[in-house]
Image 1 (cartoon, rainbow over the protein chains, first blue to last red):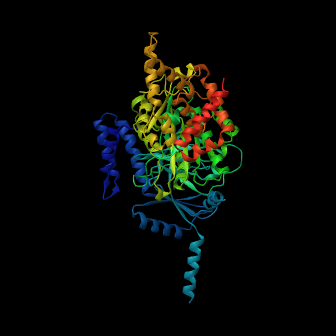
Image 2: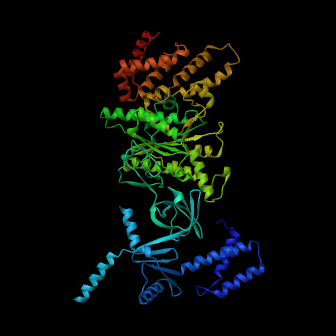
Image 3: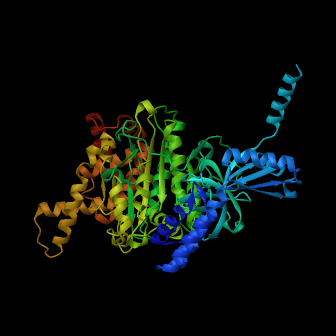
Length: 130
Length: 510
């Protein structure tokens, strides 16, 4: 997506003011968008689009998706959430999903980091090495 | 005790479960051999990116939220939403002697159906050229076997000599001739068990050429027995722009292996105009800003970093070398276009081929006035210097006088002699394709010319005289040729031998 430099700069500035104490603040995001829409500067729709994208990427960095082949018991799940929270900060949100395609093991994705201990991954690696 | 056992158990369990950490991104856009990937926060420039289905890409654009990657292999297998991950590796190609005699693609995979290439050494495509400390000056010749080049525009090992000219002026032929000449010299040295001779291995990199052209070059090299010393790297017009852009770098990596191991290599980039066009396509599709003639701003750096990798390294580093012969195709003889001027300024000289000369029958159609070699004369053997020292001047004066002499028939004897000499030199420098002449024969023929043995031969029979003389020298006067080859200079003894030999030949010639 080709975005104008000016649009990028404004969107980035909007993202910068959307934080309170290092965390995304819903109230601030709302007011920032409202004030932009009230002023309607040039390319304001593109700015909102780009801002939305930056927000999505920012939210993804603070969101963990844990995939397992079979459903986890609540105790393990809360243990995993706790451990991830310790590593990435307390504001990390977690999401649990079941993907039988993994065959076994677990796959955790936070932002663009992936920890993969699934059987599928190991089989794929084995296939590559062979 | 039981706690220790438990600890060991957990350690073993830890070893068994192999968790891998990777950095991933999601393909947002793909097309034209390029993918835009969101995520990949830890990716490095020029790092290989793995896509599902075993397709790889190369990260070229690192942006705020996206990564632009060019795709190697089948781009149609990739679709939006696919997960791409970093590999932490740089793109590398197999190198080594196993590649000699083979036809490979940009990734070093065989195209000739002769089975897999067994090589356990890999070199990265992009490598920083040897620095000042590692280098030494050019001092050994590359005998191209083309008399006009070896006499007037000599090329040394480690030099970068541009071959420039319009389409169909014999640019590729000069390079193929050089490869054949190297193969003959290598073979002769092998047969004679000459330990001092440094074989020169050749790499022919075809960029954006027609498949039929590459097949023809291959057929010629096979027929002339040059393939055992040659690798052909083919990225033809039907390959992706990515492969065409990377091909010369892969060729340079293959050549560098020879240099690093104390051997000599000759690389031919055929041709860099098409390489610049492929890079322009990649850059435009990646939405990089374009500059003059829509080429990206770093097209000069693209060629300068490639040609800078041609070098002669000093003896402490093995004394190997990489010689580069880039080819540039001009449009209607325009050397002042963007890419030709760039490459002219990067290289250590150029051989300029002219369409007019080509159609006049002067083949190779080398324009003496516009062709230069800035470092090669240091690499000429002494014998050639002795006989060819003044040839370039003679020819230049001849061209001047020939234009002048058209207007009048009354010429003084000195001018007439100069014109006659010039016409005969032009005749001598005409040479059939795929027919390199050994250096000792070149010396003999030019000595004959310098000492007036050819002056009495009619101009239209000069070529016949030369061929007969070469034939006669090969069959009858082998010892003298060998003496020239070994001594590498003409002393009084050799000169008197040459004199008697030529007088003997003149008596048989009618």
